Image (cartoon, rainbow, N blue to C red; front, side, top):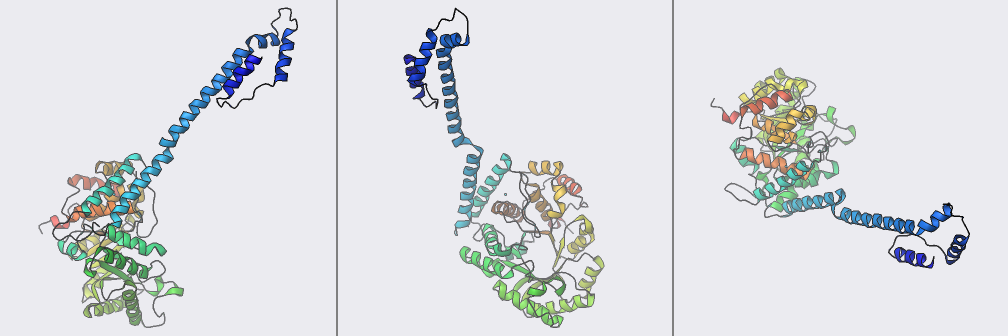
Length: 454
């Protein structure tokens, strides 16, 4: 037993965690073993004959498991999913930080945030993560290239984009709350040049939009004309009674004037690129009274373009157009099947050179965008289904509102917008537009307005 104890001590010293018998116990074992057993294979005999071998095997087995476990833990520390994700997240963050922090150099299945909604999560697949990182790098490369007419950030100014006649994305600021300034600033750094807001504290923080765009412009060396600011007058029915930005008891004309004054103050500017009536008033006469006040703002140089939102009645819109001295330049509507995707209105907008702006573009079409066919088409074109939806709208000459809060989504969307502004036809095969339109449920409209001869 002394030799057994010595061997056990030797094994136990290697960290098996086993306890070993005391000298008294060993002595008792020796005495027991000396008692006559009459050659019967009793338990004691078996223990005496094979106990040592069993102990050695037990200890060896435990040691083998401990060594294997130690190796697994070592590998896990270096290659666990958590570790991989942490490294990748840091790499993506570092890359994005470089894009946003340089004032001189200044795209899984995801849904970008729509103007009216919060984020919808990407599927997180390895291919999607790789694509997102690739997009950041592509945007970073494009932003460090200086060409004629380009300004800091790799994008044309708002005025240059408008002059080109190409479609573009507008950054939507609804429901951003106290993050509005940060997100607007980040959007401009990433490449957005058009910003949409409203003098409606219920859903918008217009003053924070002002802080955001001025901060980014100062950092990037952008001028006021490089950024397009669009806001809205919202009637009493759309305001929170406790935070209406004008006198609720004042005549309608004065309410509109007070709202404009507040918007100019909030946005830190002396003019607006676009002023939109948030929705038609309760009567057509009141709608025209608001419009006449709008027209006076254009006459005074305080506003450059006028528009209306949430107007789905074709007869009413065309009546407004006919009676307006200064014609609407913008129609901003939800893009969804309940309105028949505004087929007649969008055609009228094409004929009259009115910019059709879509919101709820992603949210209202979420089910279709999640279909296997759309996912497959998007994968073939190396973009998310949601970005492909924006590409479809842009290919029709429309202007989607994009309210994403994710820096990577911002980069992906800006990269696609830049390709289109630079003249690339992403839907090279018209049949792809046919397939996409059919799967979304949108009536077929295949040709972009700048590709037609008439």
